[in-house]
Amino acid sequence: MNLIQRLFNRAMIGMSKQGWRRAFDSVNQVCAYLDPYGNSCVVGQLCDHPENCELGDVDIEKSVQEEIARSNNCTVDSWLLEELSAWQQIHDDSEPGEMRDDFLIYADDSGLSWPEEAV
Image (cartoon, rainbow, N blue to C red; front, top):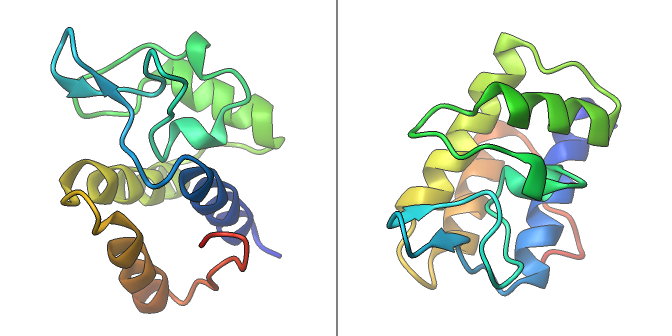
């Protein structure tokens, strides 16, 4: 299994387990890598310790890249960062109740398999 598929599986299974809810920072009114209720955003799902990740505006901050690399024993290069940014955009832009379907469309368009555990 290639790295993108492995990371996609982890992210989708994690989002499924939290009911496809966004992680939201209500103080700053933005999506967060980890919210006070324990929900993680799609990129935060790839971090073993999302509490170590700094919140950025749109970009995936260096601390997050480092945590993803540590958590998944991989290198976060520009190609992978572009892929993760696309996932984060879907997470941030999806309407409530449509996130799973939006990721299903993305998986199909990108040639990724959908993990069985992501219901």
